[in-house]
Amino acid sequence: MTGLSDRETFETARPRLLGLAYRMLGSMADAEDAVQDTFLKWQDADTAGISNADAFLTTVCTNRCLDLLKSAHKKRVDYVGPWIPEPLHIELGTTPESDLDRAQSLTTAFLLLLERLSPKERAAYLLHEVFGTPHAEVALTLGISETAARQLVSRAARHITNPVARFIPPADHQNRYLTAFVNALETGSTDHLAGLLAESVRLQTDGGGKTTALRRTLEGAATINKYISRILGRLWAGDRWDFLDINGIRGLVVYEGSRVATALTLGYSEDGKIDQVYIIRNPEKLNRLTAPLRHHPESGALSH
Image 1 (cartoon, rainbow, N blue to C red):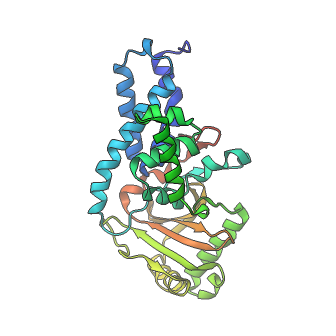
Image 2: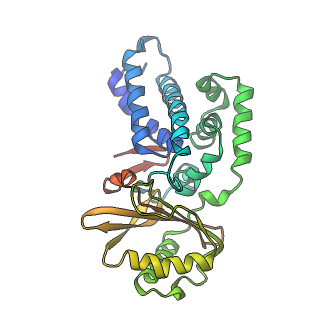
Image 3: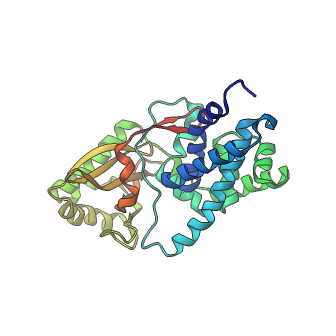
């Protein structure tokens, strides 16, 4: 062991476990539950006989996330309208080129892409491709052979064929496009967004059946341009809004009084156009936007 107390050992690992659990589950509330359950298992373990605490904690947390994903799948069958991961106020800052994979794996577009994978594919892919865990350790974590672990990672990589889901344009580009977005809301003119939306752009709204929200996905630049300029602008008239870093991409937060009522984040195509618009209105997913999180790109960890 390291000479740290059991509690210190766990607290050192907590941010990394939280970063893994959030990416797996798309919900900070569920991620915190998974990490807390991991702590309880750690308290009950014979830590003196554990030679690699990080590997033990990663295994427990990963398998708890797999259990939670099973129950989450059942809930999402009955979910009202599109499901979008819980938005978080995460600032990426300037990260070394070698750390971009971990930073970009927090974007809403990428987290939704993970939904295409089976739970074990998701775990294997994140552990190996994002957190740099060797295949042999992935195998031990998931209780499978190293060959099976390699196959899971390879299969997951084939399913995640869209590198755009991890594309983050420069900050000035994001600010310029978001400003044009706000101008369209304020003026009701479609001119502000002309040429900024990809022809294949899609707009999804997550209200979870708890507030007013679109229950279908809008598609196409002309349709979405009109919806933003003529309908959203009217719906949000009189509300206060601010720019905010959401999952590492510049986004928009709309307030009704002092309460966060809506979070909006964007996805971009490789040529820099907006190809995804995500609007989250489910009040259960908006509480944490007032408490910024720090991302540690060298490890993928998340901390308050």
